[in-house]
Image (cartoon, rainbow, N blue to C red; front, side):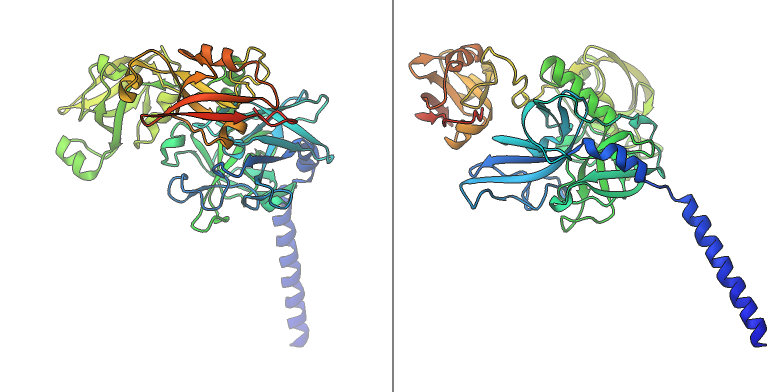
Length: 472
């Protein structure tokens, strides 16, 4: 009897070992991928003045609901608390001459950006352009012969595929985590990124992984890690990455024009509930219910009406409301789209000429220009005022430009987007070109007087440009 037990025990042990070995052989080995790709993954350290809003702070209230963007170990004083704060994120090199991709929220508002390479070199980076809607930032360092990552096709991703993340969670550089694709084309429901069809994964990523690459098993980048779904700010099994196809479209537009162009048809939409479906005579709750139509918009010109239900866009069914912005935003302005609409119990197809979404001016786009536009030592980006803005502000003459972004010296002078600049020193400004022309010769150590209107109150603001590093 004991002998029989021993034989059975040996057989069971052998069977267990065989199953374990077979199971192990089915799991992928990531070592070759990591050895090849890791040198092109970088740390991104963004420093900003103490008065700036720290986008990487753990208590960021601007993030929709429980979607959290994630930096490194939080925002903290630099060099013993000298009035500046810095945060850590990740990024990756996409060209050997120094172009680096990361998240917009990693560098948003930064006065100084330092890229730390895998060989321990530290290089100053310039912001070539940013896009808040896709949360993509394109940086440039002055170097050549850098290692790069190969780019994959994120449109071919399928749920269940293995993916690998490399980044700097909690400042622990070149940490490797892996998991699978959970879902493709996910909307996070937030208005700030409604044009991004996120890749949802179960890859363990945390604060500091922001802007880092997501790889497929071929070692190709398929996404940029951007957000986590969390009640605590830490990993809970649901993470989100920006598809690399979306990111590279943003990059090409930033390089070409300094901003990102998106389609717009001019409708406000909401979900079709069961009660709405019953009232309208719809067989299900698919589609996007039109609750408003912008006067003069593409939808208005195509005779789309309030209470219409948009069922499909260019042949793509609208299963849920969030599907429509993704499709419209990716359409080239000026193109014609076929929109399937349900109205009064009937279905019809309406051709719509797609308009262009008014985009925010990108932060420090084209930093290498020499004409003074955007790149100026004051750190101010401005736009021309519209007639409606002049009317709202009570400006009777034609002077003034509106601030769209502030950095560096301007941020430390408490200027903010929405302020209207009427004069630079003794020169009146009537256009953005006037403003850039007036400030293009400002040098380090100079002090500039601006006449600023905020909320109907006008006052002078002095901006001093520090000597040393150009923080514009």
